[in-house]
Image (cartoon, rainbow, N blue to C red; front, side, top):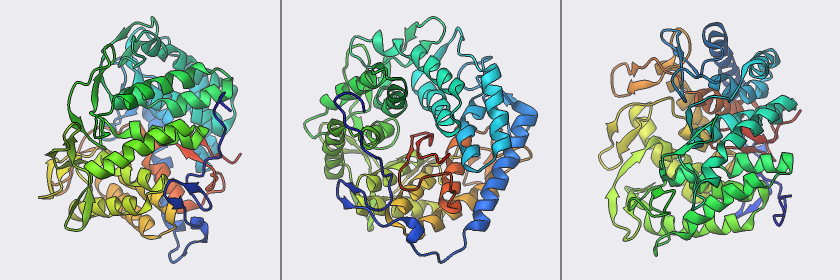
Length: 465
C-alpha cells in the first residue's frame, strides 16, 4: 500500500476484472484453441536465444549489438555503454525458462554495471529501460543486487524532478553530478515514471519515487485545454505549453498509458479519474472514422481542428490501452485499422497517411506496438484473431530483419526487399519477442490473470517463481 492509496490486484487483463466500460472476457486459456501455437512459441524462443548468443559472443556489455556487422553500439552516451541489451533481456529470458542465459546476463550486470558516469543521460529513457529493466530482473529472479542497482539509478535521476520549479522533470541529468539540463520537454518525458518509481516505493518503503512521479502527472493533467485535450510539448521550468498539437502517438502516448497503469498497479483512483477524463476527450475530439475504420488524427488541442492524418506506428499501442481500460470495442476497431496497414505494407512504416495509405517515413526500427496491442486485446477478449495478426507480425520480422548476428531495423519497408540498417534497438530484447512468447507459449512462469507489463514491457508484476 502506498499511503492513502489502497492496493488493487491488477488484472491485466484476463477474465473477471471489472474495469471502466464493463467486465473483461473469460481467460484466453479457455478460449478457442483452433490452432496449435506451440511451434510458433518454439520458433520465438529459438530465434531469441540464437540472437542472445551472438550478443554474448560479440557485444556483451554494449548497449546494442550491430546485427549486420557484429559490432558494438552505445545508446545513452557515446563511449559509455551500460549493458542496455543485457538489462532489457533478463525478464524475457526468464519467462522463456532460459535459466543459463539469465545467469549470464545477471552475472555481467552484478559484476560490471555502474552508473557513476559523468555524462548527461536522458531521464525518460533511463527510467523505462534501466530502472524498469533492473526492477523486472529483480522481480523475476529475486536477486537483491538488481534492486540495489535499480534504486541507485533511480536516485541519480531524482534531481531532474527536485531541481525543477514546477515538478516537471528536466530531460537530462548527469548521473555522476546531478546537474540537470534541457527543460524543453514533452508529456511523455515528464509523465512516464509512475510504474517504475511506484514499484520502487512499494519495495523500499520510500514514498519519494511515487510522489514525484505523480506530481508531474498532476501538473500536466491540470493544464488540459477547455476541450480536455493535451498538447504534447511543455516547458519544465515554466509549465507552459510549447505547441498546440494533441496526439495519442509520440510524444503523447505513454503519458496516457501510465495514468491507467498507476491505477492498475496501485489502485490510485485519482489517476483513473484523470485517465477517464482525458480518454473521454480524446474519443470525443480526436477519433475519426474513415471507410469504417477508426483512426486518431493529430488535432489542435484548443480548437479540435485536424492538423494531420499522419499515423505513427507507435500509436498502435493505443488499441491495447483502450481495451485494457474497458473500451474494448474502440480498441478492437483501432487495431482493425492498423491491421489494414500491416496487410498493405507487410512491415508497418514508421509513419503513414491513413487516407492515402502511403508511407511518409518508410523506416521501421523493429517496432513492437502492433504486437503489444494484439497481446492486450487477446488477453481482454480471448479472440484468436489477435494471435493470428501477431503471428503475421512475427513472420514479417523473420522475413525482413534477420541478419547474420541478430535482427535489424529497416530503413525502407517499401523497398523490394526491405533495406536493413546495422542497428538493433535495446527494446527488441524486452518488447516484441516477449509479446510473441506470451501470446503463443502459455508459459507457466507468467501469471496470465495478475500481471503488469510496463511501456517497455518490463514485467513488474506476475512472475511465477
